[in-house]
Length: 249
Image 1 (cartoon, rainbow, N blue to C red):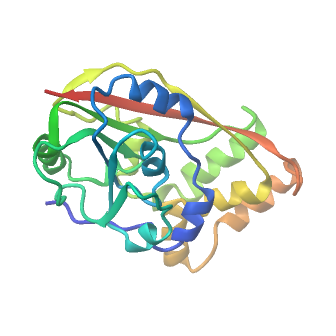
Image 2 (image 1 turned 180 degrees about the horizontal axis):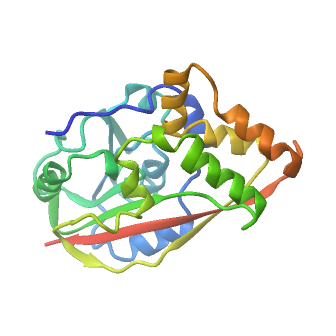
């Protein structure tokens, strides 16, 4: 089985604070395809952003992650059970889950082993929803040029190999279930400069850069953007969200 990579235990509090939440339109679309609401499994739950939404719609939610530090920052609700477990080997019983969600985590999994686990825990007709967002946009101009240069050049070589799956919106991964075509969901945020830089600091490539170079690359980005972004100014941030949706027969 693929070796586990835990890039997010360090800075887990920042992850909980600065990572954007998925749009309501995504959940509205997803829930129209779910035929039962007894139990959901949120895989790679991190700080439980998705699990807390699912808890309002399902009798029980099982939320797993490999990072105990991420789970320590999760929001608790009485019908959510958090577990420190691999995606490929959960303690769920066979044929018990109506919905499986994976938000911004699928690229870290051992794909074939995860598919086997999905088949084992799913009820007939269960839904598997996998989604990701990639590089944000602010102005379609000079600020985006600066951010793109930082993403591809400054920290480009510090991304894990799995990042390519995110850049491709998971479109080039063979997933052996019956696929349902979803739309691309807009995810719009309004952030000040501090919030934006806080989000950039959660990038795994930034963490790798800091550890390898003993320097903070975000300072370079901050200096380049200062001329275009006042400290208290709020800007519109656009993330494209790509989903792949499947029914498990």
